[in-house]
Picture 1 (cartoon, rainbow, N blue to C red):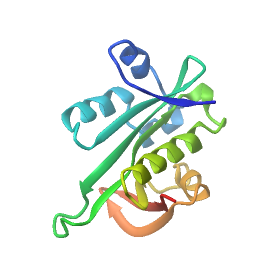
Picture 2: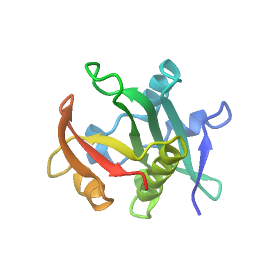
Picture 3: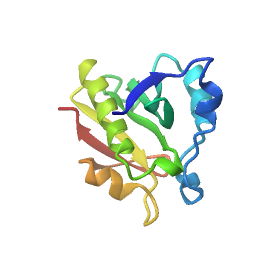
Picture 4: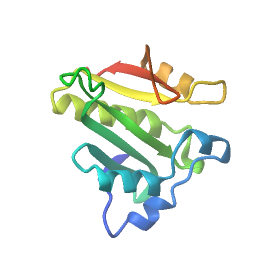
Length: 152
């Protein structure tokens, strides 16, 4: 059964070695980049390793309570910021586990929806997110589409 583990000084190097398939690299930032963003924005970032037995199989980073639209400061959103499943561990349900983990944490924090963004296109992760229940909002964020999923 997979579990989430905090990134620590003892596992950060192994975390940075998590890499997706080469054809997916254009859709996902490296773990080291995500950890730098988490360090710079600790008030919203929630980085976690996905571990099966004692092996790191992936990385996720949630975001919590960000102001999505400065014109609507009460519109606080939470969701999945990054997802990197190691190439050799894909297709085993770890991505689904990651989305569920972020959804559960959002619910624990009082949110009824989770958001994520992805680059549209035939080779991108859109079908993965749609199969998990995300629905397009019609919004975009930097060249990516926005999806929303109920946290319940």
